[in-house]
Image (cartoon, rainbow, N blue to C red; front, side):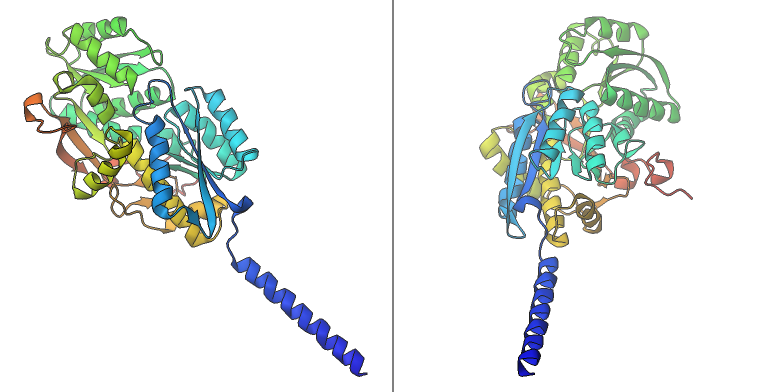
Amino acid sequence: MRITISAGRSIGLWVVAVALALGAGAAQAQISDDVVKIGVLTDMSSLYADLAGPGSVQAAEMAVKDFGGTVQGKPIEVISGDHLNKPDVGAALARQWYEKDKVDMIIDMPNSSVALAVQQIAKEMGKVDIISASASSDLTGKACSPTGIHWTYDTYALAHGTGGAMVKQGGDTWFFITADYAFGHALERDTAAVVVEEGGKVLGAVRAPLSTPDFSSFLLQAQGSKAKVIGLANAGGDTINSIKQAAEFGIVAGGQRLAGLLVFVSDVDALGLQAAQGLVLTEAFYWDQNDATRAWSKRFMEIHKKPPTMVHAGIYGAVMHYLKAIDAAKTDDGTKVVAKMRELPINDFMTKNGELRIDGRVMRDMYLFEVKKPSESKYAYDYYKQLATIPHDKAFRPLSESECPLVKKG
């Protein structure tokens, strides 16, 4: 009898112990493969390498180091790859990273066609993708994803910032030179809508192949249109080349204005102030804006030797916010992490009181800048003067106009 009771008690205690152990395990962090792995998918070798590229990898590594190198007691790793500006290459690498290499989050993607392809794969697999470098507003529109995040800027913000400012300054007729892929098409579309909305007129457009070295025929068509503004719906090396070649044709000297619809500090650095002076541009960040941006940028430049672009700053902030969400959610499950990212406010040197919207759009203020004249620049990389702050609710497309299936209408 005693043996039966004793055995029963032993079994009962064993059951309780197991239950407690299981309960404790459930409360512990659920980090897959005992590591949080971040993949920086970028352009290391082509026209977007300066605005993203190695600097994007550095920004991600800085964020991991500043976070402490671990989350929930597990190590954080950063890997990188070059998508070569080809959607099929980017998609294949993303699938390999998610499936075989156990990458939890992919970030950067300075090519909208690549970003759209990767976001679809991430959506199918319940993985996180965070876009800092691509611009197409379709990423949070018809192509939105429950686990996709558009962090830094988009074509809607660029159009309403730079495009709107140019029209208000009297530039009411436009001709576009457009990069012939998803980003350029979206930027032309969103800017043309602003021009028309503000009472202007689009006289024409021409599509230029990505990374073309010769813009002469496109610039001659723009010059011949007699449009007051030539909208450059391109980026990186294409923007640099088109501005340089426009000077050779005397386009600005002839009275037409160039609108660099997506210009980075790296572009201005490559052009020089003599060629870039007077350009009006919209950005989410400038290294010399305030004490906080200068302090972070100084650290970045000690390693990278060049000022950070808004893409680099965005990657740092995105990685930090992602890791904070993992820490709070105690899991690296993509759906749960993004849900937590929506709950947590975004506050860092770049973004104040930002928030992640249901469509994946990060809501933050944007800024309108003008490139200084050479005589106005007082020290290295002293390139911009701020013209205006564009509040987040004016900078980005309202949800009432969204095509994102996640947005409930009415």
